[in-house]
Image 1: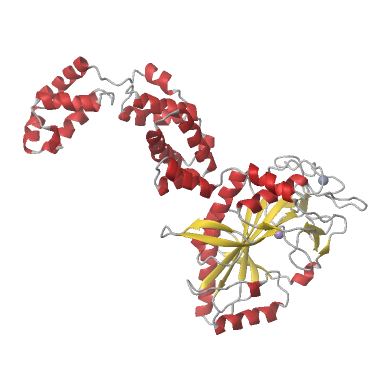
Image 2: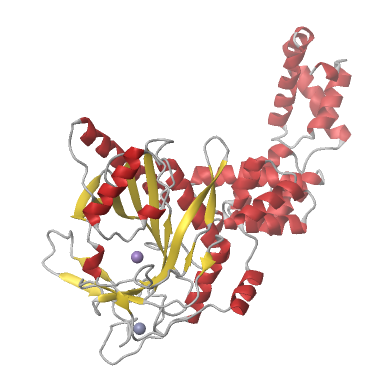
Length: 510
Ligand code: ZN
Ligand code: MN
């Protein structure tokens, strides 16, 4: 560590006295880009049936306000919370998936603060200080950098905690005559994941979030597509300056945007000789806005939650969960490249999206035309989805109908051209075999039929035949005319041979 950096650390420490992050233990390496970024991500374990400490139904979305509540999640006197075993198992799954070490003798803390969306006036959380341990610490998530290189982003720790409720206002916050509170979300389970500040630009932070979401979807502990299920706090500091936190960024794309905007703001301040304060900011989609100067850790008066017993995830539970873990993205990527001889890019397209990977695996279990399945899925199907801004889940294509199309192509029932033409229909739910029959789209590979059509074309395009003598490439125009005439149904290879024979053309010139 350079002298300037260690001075900066000392300065930070003096200013804050007790910061939650044990920054002194972190290697603050500004050498790459002059900035470091760290992330704290709250993710809802919204595949759990009940809340973290009570039996209330955790699937609260779209239900009437305050219908998923009980004495426990409301924190009424005399009630006792009980830790949700499935939540602990979900956290175990995640810890094992990111190579984190799970701690023994865990217990919860009360993090005290008054805010109307948390009626007990404290959040039940885990704490890595004051004698407490996080659920797990260490480990990493691998991301891909722009230059194609891999980078392991180290994880500092992860812990379980409960989510507060939600406040809502009529119209805007500033104009609403009242505040309404809905406690349905209150007490549902969150995992907070904290990285070490070792991302060196906003793009890396975005890639990290993307990869983390992929892992979450593989292990099935969170549906991060749900509104508010994945919330990112991004910390950024420029070398020699204070750290600023941007709170509650709702999407992966916005993480990169918010960081870029914040870095720009800080650089402008520096340029103008102004100070960068240690503060918490919000992101409004365009710029970051001051929320507050950072609370001191002492403000929360953390102390061990006396109503919950300490727990240890037993070795046998860890072993069982490890055995049950699905194939994870990194493993799958490697296997696809080996087993299907896929290029890295193709493999990534499939693996990065669990739906696509699942879809692909069903297809290859039904058909041996792996090459076509890969090509058509990655180029044509994915192209269609991108263009229409849809996902596989949102369209009616199934592995069965997709494989049916690939089979029709491979057994020469339809031409490539027809296959491409009808793919959108198949994606929207048409059954390929039936559709081809109904629309009379079967490939014309009958020699007599093709021969007479080719003759017609030669007759109608004498000029073109002359041109081919001078320029062999003009031969392809004949195929174009044929395809037009047959509405894409002609067997191209056969037609080429017929044309070549009729005008004495050497196909090797093409
Ligand atoms: Zn409850
Ligand atoms: Mn938290």
